[in-house]
View 1 (cartoon, rainbow, N blue to C red):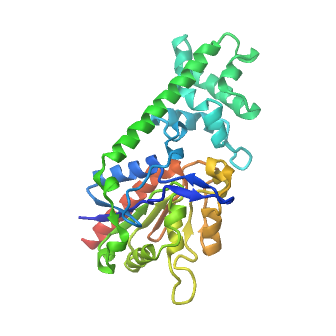
View 2: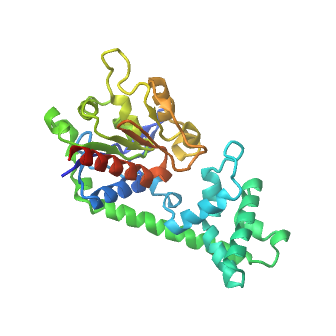
View 3: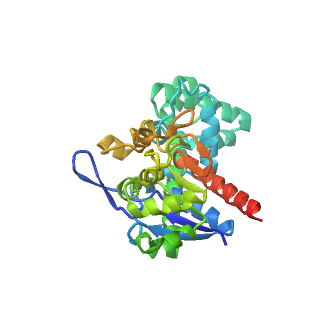
Length: 344
């Protein structure tokens, strides 16, 4: 059976640039969705932490705005695409999604449909309102209360749609946390330090989900270096997501003195995205994006922040951000199935 080393940070706090401690850990969605996909694919998923300690879900990663139900996320993406047509000019930030109520676009459209508008008409109206909210930095409720949309919806109707969406996101975050807590490997992970080089070579891939935790205990770790070398030597998939690519900074130098992944195309959570997060605003000691570039990475980020973006270069697979979670997991599955076909 195909075996994946599911490498999760066990860090529970990170030291900020000013020396203060801040809670951290893994991001729940980034840890749960790939795990479920790999298990469904029939793989043996072995949860491993650098020190054998049970990993901690990052409290920030459990925030409601990282857990949109799929229907809300898909609708929001479709609405944003109607006006964010030029990523060089338009930046849709975490602020726009979380503080302006735009994640409730689907629910607002449903209220409009209940008042007699067609699905097409409702979507057009919501897209127009979302664009105004983005451009003027106003909540969608404020936009609908303006003269241009007078009589379409009451302020209470829009606010209830926004509140309902948030409640469902909060419920989804709690459900994902409960699912992770029920996985034995997340309660009793394998201690990476206990694995011999032969044990490490027995894995067919490694996958590291994100959260700020990897910046603490995956970036400069001799045992992770051993794991990377073992998998690199047999060209097995080395995959990571968001801040997870910090593990690549544990890779040793090649015989020519260059970093093991020098010249590889890769991505990770970008500096632009980091500046929008709570830890980024508080002041992180370093950024994964910049560190990988300095190490020798050929950095390949998406056309704009927060869009799904996965880079595959030889056996290295990296995903940019939380929105890339499912695509990154699917790329690993594709790579492992391709390896199995070649072996057969």
